[in-house]
Structures are given as C-alpha cells and as structure tokens.
Length: 245
Figure 1: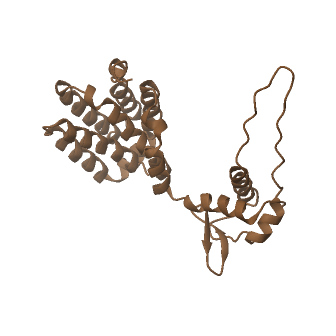
Figure 2: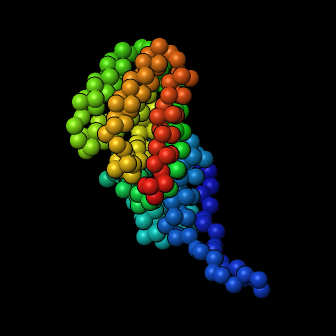
C-alpha cells in the first residue's frame, strides 16, 4: 500500500498588512480528504479492505475519535463501509442519500433564479444525446414521456400542473441512463418551487406543446433541434425571474 501522509499542521499566518484570522478547516474534513485521496491513489474498488482503524489513525497522526468522525461521514455517503469482522472496506456511492441532502440544502432554496435557469439548461440539454440514443432502441421511453405530457394537458390546478411538469423533466433525466445525474434532480424541484406561482394557466398549453416537440424530435434523432426547443422552453422563465427573486 502507498503512503498515507498525515495532515499538515495548520497555523495562523499574520503579516503587517493582514490581521484577519485565517479560517482553519476542521480536522475531520482534512482526514476525510486524505482518506478519499488514499482510495483514489491506491485505485481501490468497492469491497477492497482499508487498513484497520488503529493503523489509519497512526499513519495520519490523529486520534481514533477524529478518524471515526471522518469515516462516519464517508460511510453516510456509502464511500466506505464498516462491517463487523471485516473492518473498513470501500463501499459504493449512495446516490439516494446524496440527492436527499442536495435537495434539502438551503443554498438551493436561495439560489439566484438566473443560476437555477442556467443550471437546468446545462443539465437537461447535456443529456439529450444519450436520451436520443436510448429512445432509438427503446420505444417505451417516448411512450412514458408522452403519457406524462397527456396528463399534464388535463391538469386543472397549479399544484397538479407543477407535479406533472416536474415528473416530465425528471423522466427525461432518468431515461437518459446517466444515473449519477439524478443527484441533481433536486435542482429541478427547487426550480419548480421557485417559479410555480409565476406560471400562468394561459401558458400551460404552450408548455405541453413544447414538451411534445422535444420528445418527438428526439425520437426522430434530431438532437440539435430538440436541444434548441428545450433551451427556449427553459429560458422562457427568464422573463419572470425578476419577480421571483
């Protein structure tokens, strides 16, 4: 196994022109970073064993308590696993937990509307090539998306409209087959919560028509046209962004 260097000692640096206190990172976070880097450097795979807790603490020059705090944080995300009789092993990333934490984070609730719009554009247009490829092999994807859109057309309340609109865009992400991106699906939830009150019922039919055009273009393999339509669809919210801050 390669070396696992202990965290460097942190010190305040004060100069005549700078008297502000330099923020110290928490020891737990420093240890966590070293453990993640160790797993990467050693190219460890899920199921591979890590050194014992005592060995890790000695190598890093920290207490077992500090090490345990770091491993607990990694265990929560599924990066490491602690099993009786086996000690610490490399685990698998728990995307459900990542998604839940991301959706709860207050930063998403307070994000600038323009940032939410741009984030959606990057994520959703980015998955279209993969989605078109999968749709070409699996006709049920187009069927599922069309079914959600048909329900959306029948929506009578703003709440129901929002639920189905969100379901449509989540289905786009899921159907792309790019599972890690689902960790960002809560960006969509934050977006729809932010803009819900600004969407007028008169605009609903336009949204339904745009949705259908997007998936029809994808089914035909016209990814560029689908992307243009999706971008226009999302950017239409920019006119309302000022009122949603």
